[in-house]
Image 1: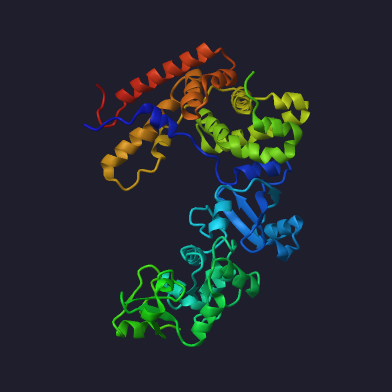
Image 2: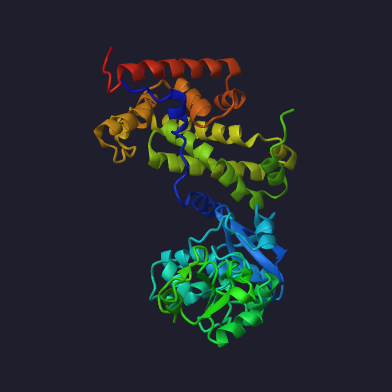
Length: 264
Length: 190
C-alpha cells in the first residue's frame, strides 16, 4: 500500500499563477505603462555602469559613458533592445559583491533575449576567473562547437551584461587583447584592475608563447592561469602549441583546460 | 490597527506607478481564487483581469487616506468573489456542474500507470473533489488552504465572522477527506 499524499500539501499545490501576458493585458486595458525594469547607476571596477534588472535577474549593462551618464538615454537604449521602460530601483542582491570580486556566478541573470548558442557562450565566459584570459577558440571548444570561433566572437560582442559576464576575459589567439563592446581601452583597464599583466601577456603571445608548463609537475596551462603564474622562472617551460606540450610529455591543467588540439 | 500594506501606502501616493507592482504581488492569489471558484481556466483569466480593472477604477475614486488603509489582498479577493456571484446572478443559473474531465488535466509524467494514478490522486483527484464542495465550504478551503490567506482575511473576503469562516473550512476539509477515501482510484470504496 502506498502512503496517501497529505491533503493540505495537495491543496497548496493547486495554487496557480496567472497565464503569461496576464499583467500586460490588464495594464493595457487600463492604459498604463507595463511594469518596467529597475536600474541603478553603480561604480564599476573601472568606471560607472548602468545596470538594469527585472524579476528574473540582471538583463542589461552599459558603461554610463556610452550614454553620457544620462539615465534617460539608458532607458531609451533599454526600450530599444527589450521593449520595456526603466525606473530607479534598489540594486539587486549580490550585485555589489559581484562587481567587487569579479565573480558573478551566483548573480541571477535574465538572458531570455539571447539565443541558446549565445547563452552557452555567456555561461562559459562566466567560468573564467578574474585576472585570467582565454582565447575565443577555447570557448568554442568548451561548449562543444570547436569550429564556431567567429560565432563565439559575435555572441560575446552581443553580451547584454558586459563586465558582470566577463566577455573581457576572452581574447584573440594571437595574443592581442582584441575588441570590446565598450572600446578596447576599457577591456585593458578591466583586466588591469583584475591584476592581469596585460602588456606582459600580449608580449608573451607575440613571441610565440601561448602555453607554459612546469618541469616539476609536468602540467601545462594558459599563461594567465593562476597555476601558471605560480611557476618559478627556473621551472617554467614555454610552448607554442598545446600539441607540442603534449608531445613533450606534459598534461593539460585541469583548471584552465588548455586542451590538446592545434591552436588557431 | 493592522500593519500598513506598503503597496497600499505607495498606491495612495502614485496609483499608476504602483499598480504594476500590485499586479505582480497579488496576481497569483487573485488568479488562484478565480480559477477555483469559476473552475474554468478561460473564465478565471477574465475574472482575475476584471478584478484588477475594478480595483484600479475604485482606487481612482478613493481619497489617499482610504487607499492607504486598504488591506489589498483580502480586498482584491473580495472583488473576485463578488464579481463571480454577480456573473452567476446575471446568468440566472446556479453554479454549473463541473466536468469531471477537468481531473484529466494535470500532467502525469513518465512514471508509468501506477505513478499516473498517484499523480492523479495527489492533484487532479483532489481538484475534482474540491470542485464538488458546496460554495461556502469550497471558498473557505480555497482561500485558507490553496491561496493561503489567514482566517481574518478569509472572513473579510467572505463577509462573514472569523468563526464561520473556520467552520466552513473545517467542514470542507472533512468532506474532502471523506470523498477522497470513497473515490480513491487505488483503494476503491471501503
